Image (cartoon, rainbow, N blue to C red; front, top):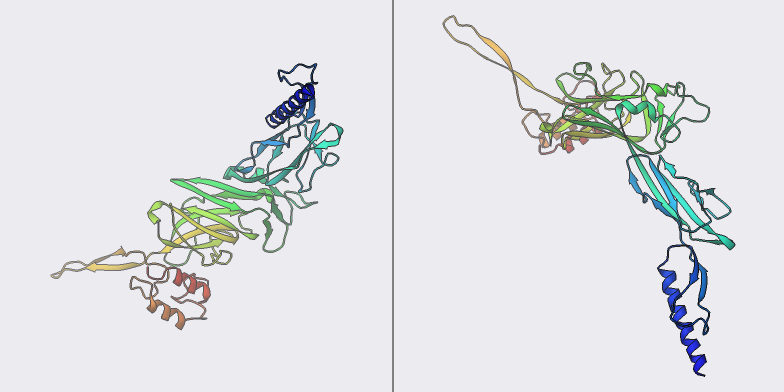
Length: 379
């Protein structure tokens, strides 16, 4: 009776030790002898077992701005199977992990650990978001299947379209700051005319001072950015985001935004997401667009001619005097956007041609001009 009781106690101790051992062990194959202090003549203390662990990934899942090399581990497993196409791996389905996985675009890695005797772990899932950030001189390197892909059968110098495979930020350094173009994932790029184009001709840069012309009368250009293909109209299936650095002296001001395919004529707000303005913050004029390729921000400077004269045969002269910049929408010119400007805009509603109420200078007084006026109400 006493011996049976001792065996029962010993067995309990072993079981408790085994549970503690298993919970604190990361190795997947556990073979050995548990030391209990009880003679092996009383009870067999040799215990074997398998601890199943799911794969882990390094670096951990998350959002990154560059290509990641992901290593999978599962201590003691026979192998690891994984997928990157959204399907669920099993020990009989998926790619056998052998070396670090290159994650150069947004994707999810699913992985399973496989053990002898048909044992397997639960499936681990690791989601990686790659917001690729490059400099403007690296644009040509983006044309590849994992970043900006060509359709099947197309070549880089003649393609009907391109599609982004991940979020892409193209930075362009300028004096005092950085301008940028952000292309969202799954954005299709085509020409407005539908013709094939040379993808290798894509460029992003800041035009040299004085190289752009043809803005509306009285417009003072505050900043510019080129993205796309010069002299070719491109369009985007999803709005892209552009940030043009204009300087912190413009912080809080509302600037107008237009675009042109040539940079010398045809400036328009068509293809600039309404209201085709920006409020400058941290020196950046940020807006969205659906067409390319030259973008410019500007304000209207009003100049008055002032003069003085002297009697007794004196001479008279005049010189331009720059007055404070009026907010877009201040049609009346009284220094504040209010109900008087609203009345003028309503009176000219639908008019074409030259009109002071045509705030975005597209030749028609309509809802876009109304949006500009409302955006600057009270300024």
